[in-house]
Image (tube, rainbow, N blue to C red; front, side):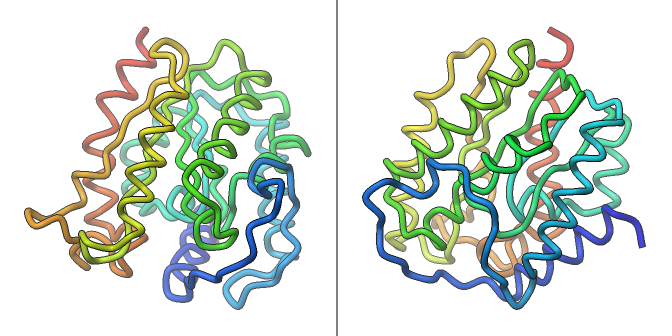
Length: 246
């Protein structure tokens, strides 16, 4: 089984098992601090998380990477055929791990995932798990994402960062979560400088005319289906190509 197919399978298990656990909000947002995964989930053990991180460390140490994808299950779950068609030719690596919040990604970057690679472009989509796993506010989530961006800039000051707005989730346009995502994305837009850090919000492309989300594009109203990934790829690729050619 290939590593990419393995990660795709893990993301599917995550999509089928996702739940939004409510936890007490800490005085210091957990998502702003580096944090190793310590909780076993039914769809991913800590040992599996360790293995996936170790595989990323090997890629970071030895591979030639021009485009680096970083994030959670939505990044990890790219359809293998779409990945091979659109991103493999760009010498891309996928450092998405299902269930990660911003603190987990910070920890991974600080424990080997930077390695020796020098990506020209970094694709970052992160933050939705800060809502579900940490019960953070949009302000706290934005701070966590900003910390990740800061770490990326320190590691790769010459790289461009395409910062994706967090996708809308839950079926109804009236869901309170939708407003939280909108507020978060307004704050993420302010993280961008328009030169090295470019913010793009593709989330509206997943919505129907009434603002609801169809199971055809997000099977669980959170994770894109193959059709959803096709929508994302079609929208993002021109921006990626433009940034790589600059």
